[in-house]
Length: 234
Image (cartoon, rainbow, N blue to C red; front, side, top):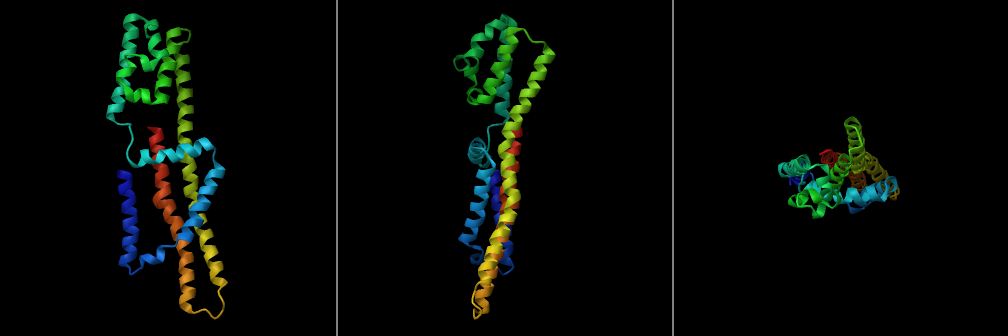
């Protein structure tokens, strides 16, 4: 909800300042400018990224806007499942946890922590390394190096949607200029006997394109991409 509140503040500050300065909100509403900027940005996003990255970026929206599961309770669940499974291995031997790591959904230990089971990355990571530890054929420093390599790979994969959306934010001001230039082209094509009011309206519409591109980049898409990066890091 904090993210939604932030977006409301952005809209309120920009439109409120515009209204207090004597502006007319109706002058900012131009669906064709929005179509040009939004459509071009989305098309470029599809071209630049794989289907998996596009799908992850799209599915990240609700989690970013309405909160995420990485809270104190989740971290306590992580510590709890690790404590229980490692304590069992200490008391009964590493082979005693074989059934737990091979079928975590059926394990009495993992079943206590549904939030962990729901996280596929987390469950697979824990079980894979407990499986390696139970075989006893890898030195501790080798296991630690393997930890670091896999965590780095997972982190890079999770950051891809954030980087993709950031590139869209960087491109939005440019698409805003494209919309503005097209508006000027339309203005210049008006017959010479057009009145000043009509020309002024066309020029204002063209400038709205630049305004929308910059506002979308720095007020909405850019901060959203940053929030996605923070969630991936967590």
